[in-house]
Image (cartoon, rainbow, N blue to C red; front, side, top):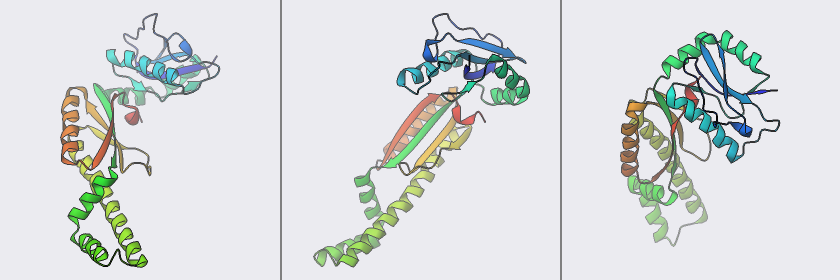
Length: 236
């Protein structure tokens, strides 16, 4: 039977309560090798990313991570069997130990940002005298010609695009000093910024407070914050 892998930690003290179950409601156990332990269970025959299974994955990692540092695996990580897991632990033991040391007592916060469309248009117009002048000229001319309206729209779109880059920089500039590391997420047309921050547990409250202050100072931005999470983006 295939083995589902939740994460990797140090072998000492890897114990799980009998009532803790993972995906497919399978009992959780540890595969130990070279002083390391892979947190695993039997993999269900059909694994689908349903909410119940995703929560089970997170629950197992949350339990393990409360006691010691864990290198979390993404949902759906499956190996052939326990023997194959042991082989990987042995082959990459030095790398896993280095990552465990580097991620000791840390959590991840993922921060995504987008613009409030109406608010950013007000901000762009307020900050750009040339755009205000063009808008007023078009209004005085009864709206302006088609070409004038098209050109004005392109100018506004360009100014918003520049503002996206500026705001992404400002966000990272505000949060990076409070983090040990930053991992940019995949680019998406839905977000102007998508960054994950590796934060010491002891600094988590200061990080969240800095986020709140940034949001108050930049009301034209909408932030979506996920965390504290296991440090998925920094396992390597």
